[in-house]
Image (cartoon, rainbow, N blue to C red):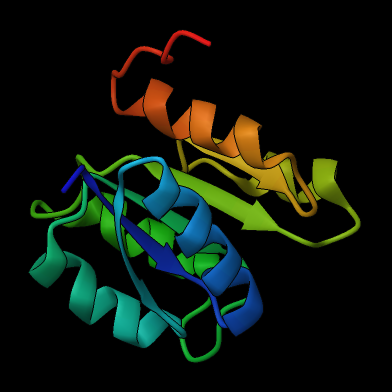
Length: 126
């Protein structure tokens, strides 16, 4: 099995879609539907990368990212932040905890390529 990707998102349809996409590219995928569960599980799961939605219940995505980046155990984990918010630039200006920002909707291949880049992997030859 490939590198482990953690998805923190409460949209079950989105999580299913991204899980199928990433598994088809050789990644292992685990997920949580709220920020509180993500804070508990990410240190346990030790993923290679985490994808975090901003609008999470219990602990929002901003606070989740801040807590992960301030924790010795998890600060090395690359974070991709997702947002369906309309004011992308305003939200992006606040983003200083993630390693990359995607606005929903986005191109699936762009996400996969960014994951590979953040993990230091080369793009497979087409």
